Amino acid sequence: MEYFPLISVIVFSYNSEEYILSTLESIKTQTYPGPVELIIGDDCSKDNSIEICRRWVDENKEKFTRVEIISHTENKGVVENYNSCLKKSQ
Image: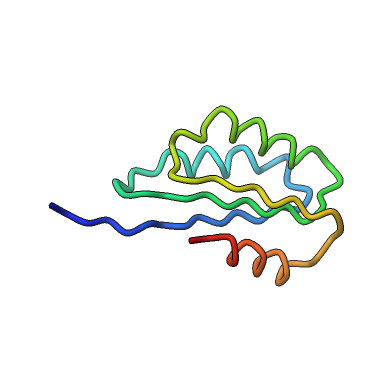
C-alpha cells in the first residue's frame, strides 16, 4: 500500500476578490491522491474576498480533508497572516 502524506495548501488573501476564485479553483483541480488541507488567511480585506471564500468552501469542502478560513478583524500584514495560517496547518 502506498502512503501519501498530508499536504497543506495555504492561501493568503487581501482585497483579492478579482483573483481568489480562480486561485481556489486551481487548487481544487490538482490531482494529488493523498489528503489535502486548505487554510485560507484573509488579512481584513475591504472587498468581498472573504464572502467569496466562504461560499466557495461551502460548495467544495468535500474535496479536502480539512478546510479552515482565518478572517482577521484588523490588517496584520503578510508575515503575521502567514504565521497564523501556518500555526493552524497540521
